[in-house]
Length: 358
Ligand code: NAD
Image (cartoon, rainbow, N blue to C red; front, side, top):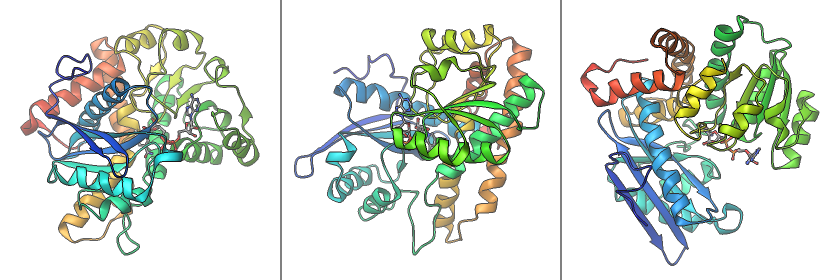
């Protein structure tokens, strides 16, 4: 398996492979860039079909974290980790502790957090081996589950996009198709429902669909049909690379705003969306709520202060003005919103001295 010549390799500072025979741990940790600060990023556990797929995922995701920290105005770099295996069968406290020991070898250059298929409990197990972990409870205090804060950020970016593209601020009657009803998707539905939006939902897990139908009066949709719904907004909240030639053609929505990381299958799909006048709210900006939350937890811990939720929410709400400035820059420069966001982020992490808070 090649690393340096891998198509997703972009000057990553460090890519490390770990295995622990006793617990069955097989993991990859990638640190993309630390110019703005230590690399902070989640740990995803997934039953990858091949090691190559796991490497591809960790390279893409870690790079995404560098851009996310930079666009959000946080003094952090980008990193990510993946554990190869079926979380339902292979995850044990011992396996997570082995992961904690792997993280400890980075000496603070990589800080681990939750992601798909990992939980607060997992982070607590990791915390028994290393202090370079966020999203944990310390004596009952800490940021805990970042998903509600991520959902708040997604909702903030979604509303900014709806205002810009559809010229409406009232969410009542807004039709939104939500793909994936996990930690973030469910909380996003809750916020949308509270403000009167009409929901169309899908998930691979039928019980989650049933819950959304019951609690939010959502319309259940099949996995393939979610793209084709006659809605205002498509909100991808499951996995990445779902905006591709096939799915974009099917979209009727004029706004795409969701939580999933790396939604564009290829960078050119940002231009395809722009050509179709579909406004894409860049994923790594609007899903940064969780990162903002854990950053403040990390900073509070380092300075011996209390985690301040109001400070976190105030930073998350800045996603509104950052989104709007990206939409305006894209329009002015005649480029896609994803390219506009990339340009701003790159300016920041490539010349840290010029970096200012979002
Ligand atoms: P999760 O695992 O809790 O939820 C994902 C949901 O998607 C699950 O309910 C799963 O059954 C469903 N799903 C899987 N494949 C699907 C498919 N093909 N079609 C429809 N549904 C499918 O994860 P989460 O924490 O809610 O995160 C969702 C996405 O947002 C991920 O891409 C994650 O990386 C990203 N994200 C999460 C956070 C966070 O704070 N949790 C922060 C930033 C980004």
